[in-house]
Amino acid sequence: MTLPLFAIYGASGYGREIMPLARAQLRQQGILSERLVFVDDATEARVVLGHPVLRYTEFMGTEASGRHVALAIADGSVRERLAGRCRSDGVEAWTIVAENVVMLDGIELGEGALLSPFAMLTSNIRIGRHFQANIYSYVAHDCVIGDFVTFAPGVCCNGNVVVEDHAYIGTGAIIRQGKPEKPLVIGRNAMVGMGAVVTRDVPSGVTVVGNPAKPLVK
Image (cartoon, rainbow, N blue to C red; front, side, top):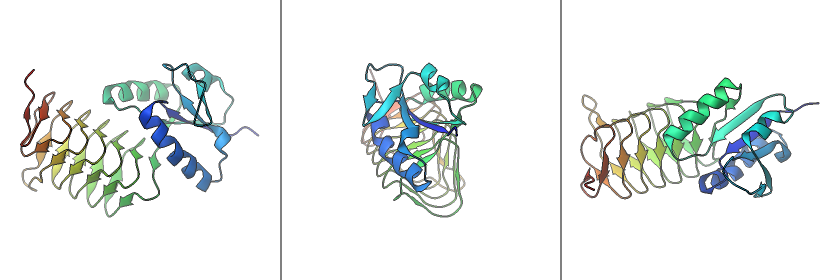
């Protein structure tokens, strides 16, 4: 009998963190770990953490009743490109949620999300496609998160915040709470530096650093 095939796309750091979560999630569903692989076209390694590393063409050429992929790539633009490629080839987006993630009321979670251990989503939150919440990150009440957004470890996103598509929020960054009538907005393709404290809107495409966060001057 042909079985489905599951993959973590990306065998580097974040992919290696997600793999044990994927393995545990499949185990709960009674799916053998032999049907779980890495996909990576940029490494010479053929086995990582005991799992085969396939080129994308090999992944597509492996006999399977269906294919599911989690995109463990930090760059949102790269994730979007890979998601489009997978979708056009009939590969389904795979959502992976660690067992100890906390999700409360009214959560809308888009396809392909990766929620690492100790992440938290509180109440009345809308999240787009292929969101990544690394360890100890949280999203508080009444937030809207766009597509292909990345939260590095320990991000604190307080209530009434809008994070637009492709934004990257660095490790330990704190985003101040907005107001119901005027949410704080992190613009599309914006980048918030490690440890930054964001107290006001960040325009699209701008990198901010420091406390309080200000545009990076190169």
